[in-house]
Image 1 (cartoon, helix red, strand yellow):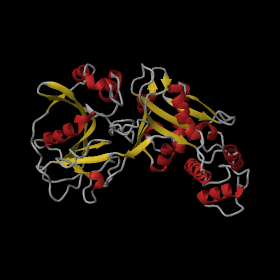
Image 2 (image 1 turned 120 degrees about the horizontal axis):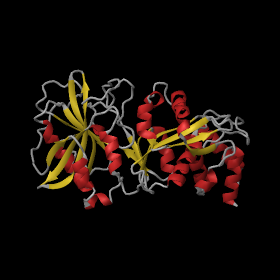
Image 3 (image 1 turned 180 degrees about the horizontal axis):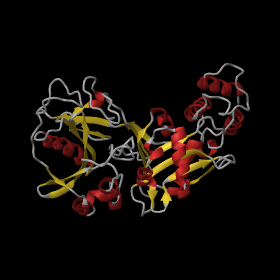
Length: 76
Length: 343
């Protein structure tokens, strides 16, 4: 799994500069990260890694790191 | 469930906090933030509030999802969402989705619908597997109207086709129509299905709006009924169809023929917002399709009056395509508290 591809997805959707996002970043830190952006991130990650998340798996994902671990679990 | 947030059904003692939340995070002047009569009318069902609420560790409300039940006495019935709001920039970006999930798990509705969804939530509903779309807005104009003060009609007004397949009989009560409705075979499978109690409460006992009822018959057979409401502005008035209860395949024709009733009236026009009607047989006859017109204006906002067309979006969990009207959910309600019950 390529972590930088995940970060790139976030940067694209949230319109962030490189380095602005850390693994600990969450919607509290990023104004643009609202519920709609969250859905867009999920859809983009599903397309990028050709996976389909189950709703119960994504309900508790809150930080960039959570997303990295989630993608990791689907691509193993 | 996240540890920072708890989701539960609201209790009656939460009412003032929900109203305060609506005032703080939705709109300061929102009628449901100020008018407990309307709030209770929509969301109080016996001794429970039809709201799921999300609370933080200090028991402060951070999200609400209100709904209306179409048949509260039975399980697995249709519900309509009416108010969905979560405070932005919480640590949980999916708290709003969790509120819907919570309602699905705890209420276990047959179908969930919502009329009046905001455009920026359409992606979320689609991701959750709901069907979304825009209500069509149709209007038939009265050729005998001398001056249009509410709407901007088309340059050339259509002549209303006077075919008489249906008879529309005005009634002051829904009682007889409802007696007929619940013995009609088509209604047993109707989506959304609404109980007798719901219809009576929604339309006969509305605290502010006075509705008109028109029973529809054909060759002396009951075919359904129409609920309408008079819109008044600037010394003029128009008739709005709020809901049509009939067999789905007949609804388009019934609405189209209902246009004949305004020719002998002083209404400027009759209009209707509806989804999924067969517009091949409908829009090309007596009605104009306002949704696809750049020249015709039929306002939707009257508090205050806004001279522009308004799009209304909807979502439904029914994959087969549901006919929804402006009367579904809480779209047809006053927006300011000073409205009094009048025809």
